[in-house]
Length: 193
Image (cartoon, rainbow, N blue to C red; front, side, top):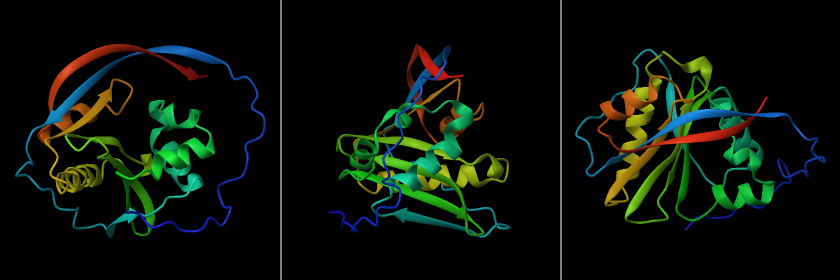
C-alpha cells in the first residue's frame, strides 16, 4: 500500500480558464504488443553514464506533467493533458500504478509507468526518454528495467502499445525486448496545432 505524503500545495494550483485552442486531426496506426513470459535478456546500463532509476512515491501532479510533456510532446501525447489536476492525481497515485524515473548525472532522462491494476494483464502504460537523452543507449536499458520491474508482480502477461507518432525506433525496440504484436488499428487523433 502506498503511503500518502501531505500535499505542500506545489503543483496543485488551479488552471486558468482555457482559451479554445486550434486543433487538427492526425492519422496514426496503433500497434498492440504483448509478452507472455519474462525475457531472459537484460540490458546493462551504458558504462560511460552515471545513471540511477528511482521509484517515484506519490508523484506530484506538476512533476508528472513535466515528465509527460518533456517525453511526449514531440510525439503528440495528449491523453493525460486533458485530465484536470484532481483526475491526474487520482490516476498516477492509484494503487497498482507505479512510476519510475531514470536520472542521468542527476537530470531526469526518462520514465516509465506500470499499471498492474488488472493482475492478469499488466500494462507498460507509458515509456520514453527526454529528447536530450536519445541515442545514448539509455532507452534499451530503461526498457529492460521496465520489463523486469513489471514481471516482479508475476502477471499472466505484459502489454504495451505504440503508434506511428512515437519514435520510429519504438516498435523495433519493443520487439527486440520480446514483445510480440497481436493487433493493429488505425486511429484518428485530434491534437493541438
